[in-house]
Image (tube, rainbow, N blue to C red; front, side):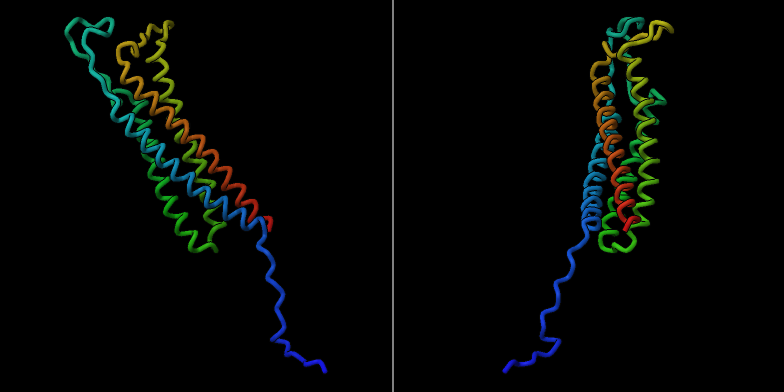
Amino acid sequence: MASAEPESAKAAPPPPPPSTAASGGANLFLASVGLRLVVFAAAVSSVVVMVNSKQTVVNKLRGVPPGIPVQAKFDHSPAFIYFVAALSLAALYSLATILTSLFVITKPNCLTKVLLHFAVWDTLILGVVASATGTAGGVAYIGLKGNSHVRWDKVCYAFDKFCRHVGGALAASLFASVVLVLLVWISIISLHARIRK
Protein backbone atom coordinates (compact mmCIF):
# COMPACT_ATOMS: atom_id res chain seq x y z
CA MET A 1 0.00 0.00 0.00
CA ALA A 2 1.55 3.32 -1.10
CA SER A 3 1.55 6.06 1.44
CA ALA A 4 0.42 9.39 0.19
CA GLU A 5 2.83 12.18 1.05
CA PRO A 6 1.51 15.67 1.46
CA GLU A 7 2.49 18.16 -1.23
CA SER A 8 4.55 20.21 1.22
CA ALA A 9 6.76 17.20 2.05
CA LYS A 10 7.86 16.77 -1.55
CA ALA A 11 11.24 18.26 -2.38
CA ALA A 12 10.97 21.68 -3.95
CA PRO A 13 12.82 22.12 -7.21
CA PRO A 14 16.26 23.67 -6.75
CA PRO A 15 16.42 27.41 -7.30
CA PRO A 16 17.70 28.46 -10.71
CA PRO A 17 21.39 29.31 -10.79
CA PRO A 18 22.18 33.01 -10.77
CA SER A 19 22.58 34.48 -14.21
CA THR A 20 26.10 34.91 -15.45
CA ALA A 21 25.41 38.54 -16.31
CA ALA A 22 24.44 39.34 -12.73
CA SER A 23 27.40 37.53 -11.16
CA GLY A 24 29.77 38.89 -13.79
CA GLY A 25 28.45 42.40 -13.16
CA ALA A 26 29.01 42.00 -9.43
CA ASN A 27 32.56 40.73 -10.04
CA LEU A 28 33.26 43.66 -12.37
CA PHE A 29 31.91 46.09 -9.78
CA LEU A 30 34.17 44.60 -7.10
CA ALA A 31 37.10 44.81 -9.52
CA SER A 32 36.28 48.48 -10.10
CA VAL A 33 36.52 49.12 -6.34
CA GLY A 34 40.05 47.70 -6.40
CA LEU A 35 40.94 49.80 -9.45
CA ARG A 36 39.63 52.92 -7.74
CA LEU A 37 41.98 52.17 -4.87
CA VAL A 38 44.84 51.91 -7.40
CA VAL A 39 43.88 55.30 -8.91
CA PHE A 40 43.85 56.83 -5.42
CA ALA A 41 47.31 55.44 -4.64
CA ALA A 42 48.74 56.55 -7.99
CA ALA A 43 47.27 60.06 -7.70
CA VAL A 44 48.46 60.56 -4.12
CA SER A 45 51.96 59.27 -4.91
CA SER A 46 52.11 61.52 -7.97
CA VAL A 47 51.15 64.59 -5.94
CA VAL A 48 53.59 63.76 -3.13
CA VAL A 49 56.49 63.22 -5.55
CA MET A 50 55.72 66.42 -7.48
CA VAL A 51 55.33 68.57 -4.35
CA ASN A 52 58.66 67.28 -3.03
CA SER A 53 60.46 67.95 -6.33
CA LYS A 54 62.73 70.82 -5.43
CA GLN A 55 66.41 71.34 -5.98
CA THR A 56 68.87 74.19 -5.54
CA VAL A 57 71.99 74.32 -7.68
CA VAL A 58 75.04 76.59 -7.65
CA ASN A 59 77.52 76.97 -10.53
CA LYS A 60 75.73 74.39 -12.66
CA LEU A 61 73.25 76.34 -14.77
CA ARG A 62 74.58 77.99 -17.92
CA GLY A 63 74.00 81.74 -18.13
CA VAL A 64 73.86 82.26 -14.34
CA PRO A 65 76.78 84.09 -12.71
CA PRO A 66 78.99 81.90 -10.47
CA GLY A 67 78.04 81.64 -6.80
CA ILE A 68 74.35 82.48 -7.27
CA PRO A 69 71.99 79.70 -6.13
CA VAL A 70 69.09 78.87 -8.42
CA GLN A 71 66.12 76.84 -7.18
CA ALA A 72 63.61 74.72 -9.10
CA LYS A 73 60.26 73.92 -7.46
CA PHE A 74 56.97 72.65 -8.80
CA ASP A 75 55.19 75.92 -7.95
CA HIS A 76 57.49 77.87 -10.30
CA SER A 77 55.51 76.49 -13.25
CA PRO A 78 51.76 76.98 -13.80
CA ALA A 79 51.69 73.65 -15.64
CA PHE A 80 53.03 71.82 -12.58
CA ILE A 81 50.61 73.68 -10.29
CA TYR A 82 47.74 72.58 -12.53
CA PHE A 83 49.14 69.04 -12.46
CA VAL A 84 49.15 68.95 -8.64
CA ALA A 85 45.62 70.42 -8.46
CA ALA A 86 44.25 67.96 -11.04
CA LEU A 87 45.82 64.91 -9.41
CA SER A 88 44.63 66.07 -5.98
CA LEU A 89 41.12 66.27 -7.41
CA ALA A 90 41.51 62.77 -8.87
CA ALA A 91 42.64 61.41 -5.49
CA LEU A 92 39.70 63.04 -3.72
CA TYR A 93 37.30 61.74 -6.37
CA SER A 94 38.73 58.22 -6.08
CA LEU A 95 38.28 58.25 -2.32
CA ALA A 96 34.67 59.44 -2.68
CA THR A 97 33.86 56.76 -5.25
CA ILE A 98 35.47 54.04 -3.11
CA LEU A 99 33.19 55.00 -0.22
CA THR A 100 30.20 55.20 -2.56
CA SER A 101 31.02 51.76 -3.98
CA LEU A 102 31.20 50.25 -0.51
CA PHE A 103 27.79 51.77 0.26
CA VAL A 104 26.33 50.42 -3.00
CA ILE A 105 27.55 46.91 -2.20
CA THR A 106 25.21 46.96 0.81
CA LYS A 107 22.34 48.43 -1.27
CA PRO A 108 22.55 46.73 -4.69
CA ASN A 109 19.17 48.05 -5.88
CA CYS A 110 20.75 51.44 -6.74
CA LEU A 111 23.67 49.91 -8.68
CA THR A 112 22.39 50.88 -12.14
CA LYS A 113 22.08 54.56 -11.25
CA VAL A 114 25.51 54.58 -9.62
CA LEU A 115 27.10 52.87 -12.64
CA LEU A 116 25.70 55.58 -14.90
CA HIS A 117 27.07 58.33 -12.66
CA PHE A 118 30.43 56.56 -12.40
CA ALA A 119 30.70 56.26 -16.19
CA VAL A 120 30.09 60.00 -16.64
CA TRP A 121 32.29 61.19 -13.78
CA ASP A 122 35.10 58.72 -14.50
CA THR A 123 35.24 60.08 -18.05
CA LEU A 124 35.40 63.66 -16.76
CA ILE A 125 38.17 62.87 -14.28
CA LEU A 126 40.04 60.95 -16.98
CA GLY A 127 39.96 64.09 -19.15
CA VAL A 128 41.28 66.24 -16.29
CA VAL A 129 44.09 63.81 -15.40
CA ALA A 130 45.08 63.25 -19.03
CA SER A 131 45.17 66.98 -19.77
CA ALA A 132 47.25 67.68 -16.65
CA THR A 133 49.65 64.86 -17.54
CA GLY A 134 50.03 66.19 -21.08
CA THR A 135 50.53 69.76 -19.92
CA ALA A 136 53.15 68.87 -17.31
CA GLY A 137 54.77 66.42 -19.73
CA GLY A 138 55.19 69.16 -22.33
CA VAL A 139 56.95 71.43 -19.87
CA ALA A 140 59.09 68.54 -18.61
CA TYR A 141 60.10 67.66 -22.18
CA ILE A 142 61.26 71.24 -22.79
CA GLY A 143 63.24 71.06 -19.55
CA LEU A 144 64.84 67.83 -20.72
CA LYS A 145 65.49 68.62 -24.39
CA GLY A 146 65.07 72.40 -24.70
CA ASN A 147 63.85 74.07 -27.88
CA SER A 148 66.51 75.52 -30.11
CA HIS A 149 63.99 77.28 -32.38
CA VAL A 150 62.87 79.67 -29.64
CA ARG A 151 66.17 79.47 -27.71
CA TRP A 152 64.73 77.74 -24.64
CA ASP A 153 67.63 75.99 -22.96
CA LYS A 154 67.35 72.57 -21.40
CA VAL A 155 67.78 72.57 -17.64
CA CYS A 156 67.66 68.91 -16.60
CA TYR A 157 71.45 68.59 -16.90
CA ALA A 158 71.63 70.90 -13.85
CA PHE A 159 68.35 70.05 -12.05
CA ASP A 160 68.76 66.29 -12.37
CA LYS A 161 67.05 65.37 -9.08
CA PHE A 162 64.14 67.74 -9.79
CA CYS A 163 63.65 66.29 -13.27
CA ARG A 164 63.72 62.72 -11.96
CA HIS A 165 60.98 63.60 -9.47
CA VAL A 166 58.90 65.21 -12.22
CA GLY A 167 59.38 62.15 -14.43
CA GLY A 168 58.27 59.83 -11.62
CA ALA A 169 55.19 61.94 -10.93
CA LEU A 170 54.30 61.92 -14.64
CA ALA A 171 54.72 58.13 -14.84
CA ALA A 172 52.36 57.63 -11.87
CA SER A 173 49.87 60.03 -13.43
CA LEU A 174 50.00 58.25 -16.77
CA PHE A 175 49.37 54.97 -14.97
CA ALA A 176 46.36 56.55 -13.21
CA SER A 177 45.04 57.64 -16.62
CA VAL A 178 45.24 54.09 -17.96
CA VAL A 179 43.42 52.73 -14.89
CA LEU A 180 40.73 55.40 -15.33
CA VAL A 181 40.23 54.20 -18.91
CA LEU A 182 39.69 50.69 -17.52
CA LEU A 183 37.21 52.06 -14.98
CA VAL A 184 35.19 53.80 -17.69
CA TRP A 185 35.19 50.59 -19.70
CA ILE A 186 34.07 48.50 -16.68
CA SER A 187 31.27 50.95 -15.83
CA ILE A 188 29.94 50.90 -19.40
CA ILE A 189 30.17 47.09 -19.71
CA SER A 190 28.41 46.61 -16.34
CA LEU A 191 25.73 49.12 -17.26
CA HIS A 192 25.20 47.44 -20.62
CA ALA A 193 24.85 44.03 -18.95
CA ARG A 194 22.20 45.37 -16.55
CA ILE A 195 20.21 47.11 -19.31
CA ARG A 196 20.09 43.96 -21.48
CA LYS A 197 18.54 41.87 -18.69
